[in-house]
Structures are given as C-alpha cells and as structure tokens.
Length: 182
Image 1 (cartoon, helix red, strand yellow):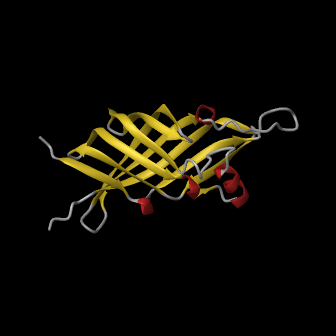
Image 2 (cartoon, one colour):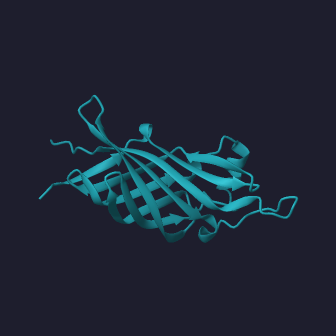
Image 3 (tube, helix red, strand yellow):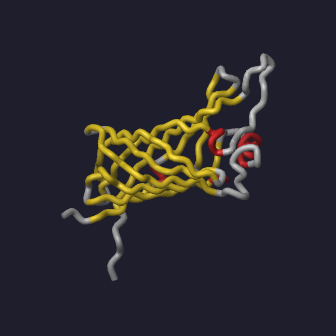
C-alpha cells in the first residue's frame, strides 16, 4: 500500500485568474494574489486526491484599484464579512493520462454550491533542490448569481453590463510537504 502524501501549493509558481464579460463585447481578467491549498494523495497517484483551497478575497487584482474596491464591497464579494473563498473536493477522477475531473463544494460570500472543474495535468519535474513538483491547470465556470453576486447595470442599449458566468483558470504547482523529524 502506498503511503499518503500531502502536496502543498507553491504560491510563487502558481496563479489564480478569473474572466468575466463586460458590456457583452469584451472580457475583463483579474487575479487573486493570496491563496493556499493542498492535495492529499495515496503515494504519487493523484487519482482520488482530496483537495482543499482557500483564496484571500482582499487580494483581488484587476489592475484597477477603484474596480477592486467595488468588487470587495457588498455589491460583490463583501470581503469584510466574507474574507475567504474556499473549495473542498469531493472527487478527483482520472479521465486520461493528462486530464482529471474534480468536483467539490465552493463557498463564496457565505454560499456553498457544488462545482465541477476540469484539471489538466502538466507533468512533473525536479526543481533543482531535490523536490519533485507537479503542475496542473484547473478550469471551470461559475455563475456569480448563484453566490448572491447579483449586482449589474444596464448598458445604453438595455443590455447587461456584466456577464453572469465567471471563467476560472488556476495554474497550480504543488510540492510534497516533507515533515521535519526531530
């Protein structure tokens, strides 16, 4: 039987991005700069991994401080009341050699909903310091309305200014957590 391993996210080699339609004609991209997470596996096989992930809402960055402030307000994330977005997997299944399907519970603004995410395995490599790292790209779509983020405004032509679906893209690199022995 393989021994269980804990893999932690390397934040300096990972990123969490989101995209949303603006005025129906273009896409605004943003990121969260502070996040953490881990995966627990049986050995080096990620099938069946237990994944948890936390994002610091106040670290939102759309390259526009005024917009970032609005996104942290009650119209959207309500960051003072709900400072974190969290995800906990309920399944992590291998689709083929390069892809996994991950399902879990996403909690945002005090609302927890099931989400399905695609996980593309990028491979593994040594980092030059004796550590093996694995790379993944996680993608999915979340409807912000389901999490109580219903703010919107009408365009001059009567259309909605913001799309309801948010595309999530996380490029994640993990390294094995090695417990120090006394």
